[in-house]
Image 1 (cartoon, rainbow, N blue to C red):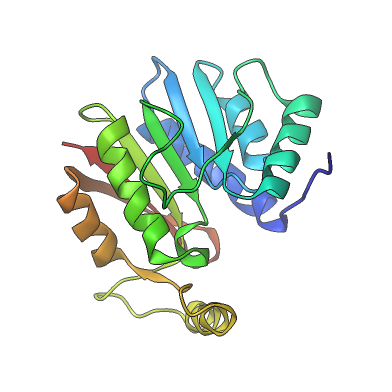
Image 2 (tube, rainbow, N blue to C red; image 1 turned 30 degrees about the vertical axis):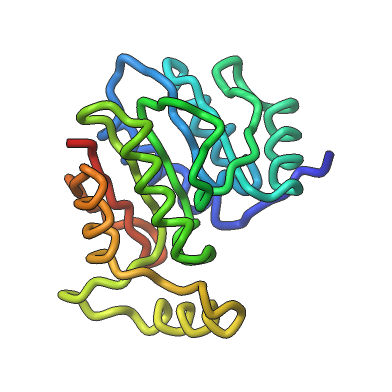
Length: 199
């Protein structure tokens, strides 16, 4: 199995950890990581939260292989084997979770993946449980940086179903699925973490 590396991980893993420290209860539980990619976040964050069982997932077989390699070489006991999971699927291979983390998926997947993410959060999370979504977003009340506009254009040129999502659209999806946004964190490189909780 081949380990993959994502340069952005080194830049954002500590800020993501800090947000999780503010939002996750100390009691622990099962955290479902959606679109876990290389697996580097899963290793670092599961080490940072030993009371949480950490379940990484991804739809890509090569990503699953990379996650498994990272888990085998560096993973703590609370890091569970990765699951193949496509967020856009109606049925997920899990029945419940105490928290959901999704990093850098919404803009490099079709809208159906984000729709599926919110629908699954409504099914899987208990009342008050958080879903944290990290990435670049468009916000109507704030001017978008030139770098994010260029990034959006580049994504759409590669795949017309990709692109930065409007935060207001995510908020509407939340409302349709018994969730509401409870926090917004400014993150490195003009990214945000949006926190939604089950109502």
